Image (tube, rainbow, N blue to C red; front, side, top):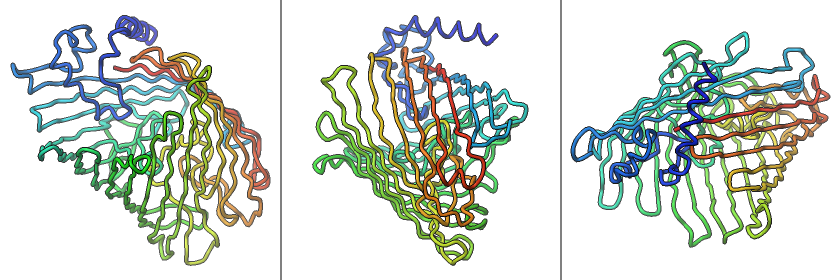
Length: 460
């Protein structure tokens, strides 16, 4: 049956390849797409069945309309020695899939309802958190728009995804089957050259049953952010504040309730046609049990593109310094908390998190054709503080410090291949090899980890 479905979708995809370029881009956040252009161009809307699904008018003026969309993401994953383990269970081969369907109902220019269903499956014997989810409501919100001169005020309430900045603290978790959403209220105010966000809500937890996702007892988050076009100062600027409150968080220094606040500054943009940059600074403070939090992170991501050279090489260098806890057992905590981060921040291997570490990450991306590209990279990791441990991509403590004085975690090589056949069909491969360093060797199993993930994405 799956083969027949794939064949049918592939036929539709290839039939409409030449027509797809006129449509708005399919976005990572599907709720942010806008297909109202199809209501103004019947010829374009009637070109294909897909186009018709994106904007179905219900009245003569077309002020009331509905759109549909979805995706199917099958993936095959192979891992040897997961987390450097020597156990047989650390060698994995499994199939996973994500299916998501959404509908977007506009009752006028000012009232909108969005809903999205999700399904996740893995072929392992036992369910896996954020991978296994039989069927659930991933997003369901109402949005009210108030135009104010040339500005727009939006009020959105309900279950929804949220991405802030480059996703270091607030991301939708696209690597696993189950993307992250929040039961949340938001106010968004946008105008020429700026956009802003005010939000309050709780993360949605993902049990593996039918319609049982919920935010009860999950961490609270709240905050505000402003992004401004500051091209006169070479780029754009974002300033933000994010609060976090959880009943229980575990670090190398113990388990306690935590209330944490983050102040952040991000500068990003282009300098000329070749150079792109993203620099982000965060400072955190608050309480972890009876301990005082003081933590920080510094991130730089710079790229230089040789646009007139064969394959248009993109030379990149990324640097991170993320604080750890200096002294275990005192009244202070220095471990940085990346909140609702992307667990695949360093790749689908998800071996380490941006916590108590600093790294150097060179890369080169080659554009072989308009649709086919590859990225070759390496990442070298050290512990920031010797009295703090090592954390996995899910933020769990996988190696306690135990007074070990080795700073070197290890290094990871990576090879990514991306082939975007067209708007509706994309193929990718991610391969990593993580060589254990002295700290890993001296604190437990230290077999080098190999990972490969083959992914297909089909969507409309």
